[in-house]
Image (cartoon, rainbow, N blue to C red):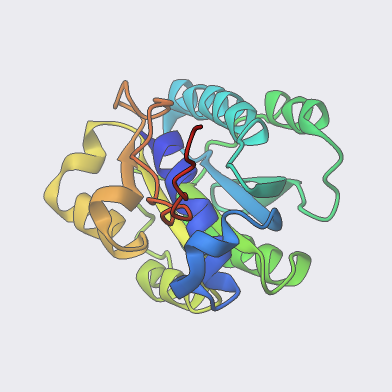
Length: 234
């Protein structure tokens, strides 16, 4: 499901980033280049538990592989990825600016160690936002994939305000719930407030078996071709 959304969403955002949505059909045939910058934010806190942390790592390894292979007709996608984990502090495991290749990224993610302290999601959002703003071109597609159940330490600063500030920098937020806890009304409301809109697209769950389904939505219909001329046969 998340891969399906990325396949239909990212090229349109490239188009919108250049302020030409009304001529999408033209841009889709011109072979433009789009910079896609994705920051994965993993919950490494005591509320996530170590087995959910390992599940997050497996998801990032799988989904990043699909992103790296993403192809959209008419576009050349340049994909870079970052990885952060958070608990009572934030550890940037892979910076956008230090991106080399997918194998190197996978090595960084695979060796991430569980922290297991308090949950301070606001600090993670702030760090990811700063990283994306400072290390990516202003006309790139900036995406944050935040993994959380919406459970924070009582002293965690306003997470919704932090997300709103990040979205003000043009960052699109996916909020990915880790367990059934994310479905509880208060936690789900927090995920929906953190995520970009519409929530039915940007709020996802690791429990969803179709999260990485490759089948996407139909793309935009292209322009009609030139009308042919009748050829008489003698």
